Image (cartoon, rainbow, N blue to C red; front, side, top):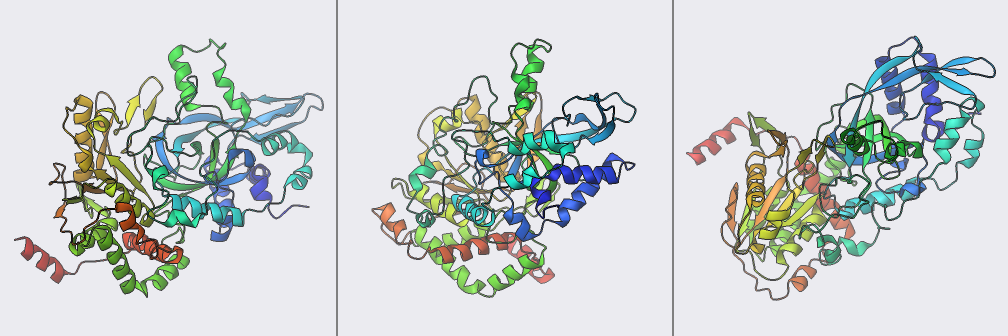
Length: 570
């Protein structure tokens, strides 16, 4: 008897049935039917119940099952050609059948069976592969809430009984993929999570600030294996190579998406690392190893449904145009006046009593590029706060507070050493035919905090000058020019940049606000610790939702207001 959860735990049987029911259809139509089938079953509750690659260690996930993955597109590989349909012959019985080659990496061939890929019934089609990484700079509180939801919604019962009942025709690959689990040490995305103390701006700061602010060394990997290519140093998480079969999905670098697909960790995918294979020259082998690393290191995910994320706040429904999202925002905006005043008061305290600076910082936090006129980005607001205290770690504490309010944030100390050594700009590696990640390869909605108070006297080398120019272009044009050696490739973004400095920054800015402090602070930790009582879990959830909703809310400027604005500029 078919089980209710068959499409989650045994998706290949569902896909094969769709394939057999529509053998005469084109591959494009078949993919649309598969996409439609799984989309219809993905309600918000069902989506939350799926195992997450972000929250679950790989050794607890089963290959060949449906999972979800929240990520950013780091690189787009060249299209691949594969056999979408092939004939299989049983040498014992002489029986033949047609098998679906889509949504899998390894052909389904049982004992005493052979595949005839040259048969007239075989069809070669195209698919796209993208290299995805966990969203760079995603806040710890986002990961912790998603972890809690995943543990609460994912059933703990074993599916071994269900696997024992599967049909004999597809027993070979289904058992191999569903039962195979790859053990990997130190590959979990986050820790156990759920510690309320992490919501406080004065706690957990040392762990968060290590690595990113100083541009620390990237995690060590085996010299024979490709780099995980994380944009931020010491970033944790599992990258995936996502196979996309639908031609209607537009994935570009820095696209932030949630993917529902079939997880593949087949150990046979590691065969490209056979050093005794001399069939390819060195350059071809290096490219193959970079594009097809072992699945235990970089799993494959065959996309069934791809959704662009306009936000990644787990406290709000993911689909902005859904009824549930509209209801949540309506309920939130009923108390919008007090929320704004509370948030302003918190920011004013963090900025040592400067109310005007708090107003601009709030506008900065909810700003984002909503349109472009030619290359001019509209909606950005880069704020330069000067006269920042030179007290130890003040800028780190301010960034930590921002990270508690926003879903994504990155902190960089603008020291001479960092500018001369950090890889800010992504660079094309022609040997491996991939884009090496840079720290400015960030998803939309990220808050980038630049600490210019850490700058000391020194000499910038050519790489440092290039990094400073890249920061200026990011601020002014909301664009990063990827280094393709002979020519730059512009990639547009929407990153809110906050520059903290002693004097006015030399970097471009939209607003310069010299801090006018009214509080005398000797102990930064004690000063920010006074906010702990106000930043309760319930209060933080409302403030975070307020910032996320304000970023996405539709608004219009009346003709009268535009005239007033123009008169003010004149």
